[in-house]
Amino acid sequence: MICIYADREGQKYRLLAKGHADDGDADGALVCAAVSALTGALLQFARSQESCRFLRATMSHGYVFFSCRGGLKNAFEMIVAALSALARQYPRHISMMGVDKIAAASRCEKAAKVR
Image (cartoon, rainbow, N blue to C red):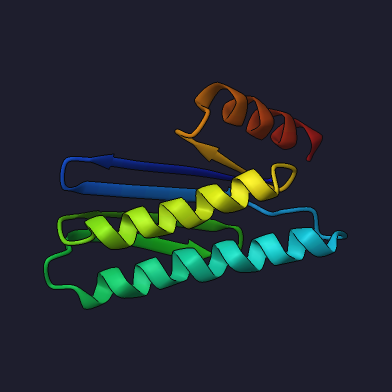
């Protein structure tokens, strides 16, 4: 299960994605690739924007963290909307915090216990 937390507070944007979709499932591979492409695109865009200040970003296998101030409102909202659409379409593989915080947190906790 991929657990994603996305937050916008004024001009501060944060996104954290952790985990993997089920490796033995074709849908899981698709979801992992989509999350990687979307979050990677957001990071590259943020790095290219001078208006994105105090950028902190880490991307590794199964982990993405992103935080910055300013300049990303439309791009951030578009990526979060795309990730939310994936979560609705593939609820077995991805969970978004903020869409339904209680249900998402519960699914992420259960997935962590299984591993």
